[in-house]
Length: 169
Image 1 (cartoon, helix red, strand yellow):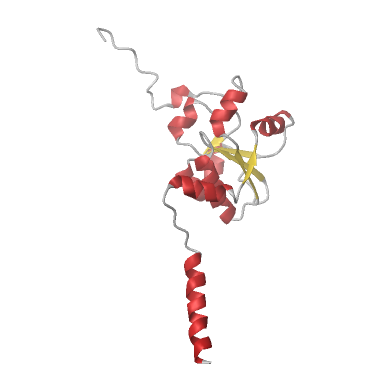
Image 2 (spheres, rainbow, N blue to C red):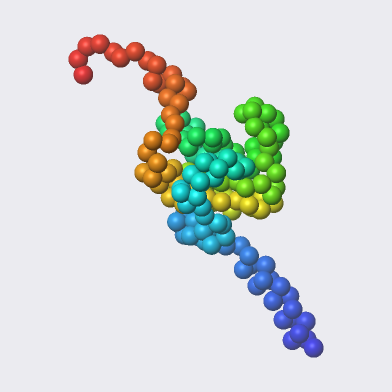
């Protein structure tokens, strides 16, 4: 009986410790997250766009990356603020869109798919059910559909509006 009383707390302690995952690299963390999220191919996203399907497309890259090139119809919510902004009605009012419902299709993308994989895992924990990651990210989209992306260079903090300096290089 004493062995059973000792074994029960030990089993509970081991079970609690096994839930805390530790990774040596970010790549390991992404690999683990990839097992928990679903992916959508560029061609599938293009088909959704062509058929006017209902979905929310979120670019989780930093603002500067987004303005250099993005998929039409996407909203930029950097990964660092995604969990806070996705459920903030004021944020969605500010970008002129409806706040996505928990069961609505949400597609996330970044440059290659790593940040969006981690972001997808995160918002799934918030209760969003139909979350997808664009396989290969913006880079794959840009290569597959080189004529179907936009740039908004004037929003790059005025960097592109500065007049060229005269004189020698």
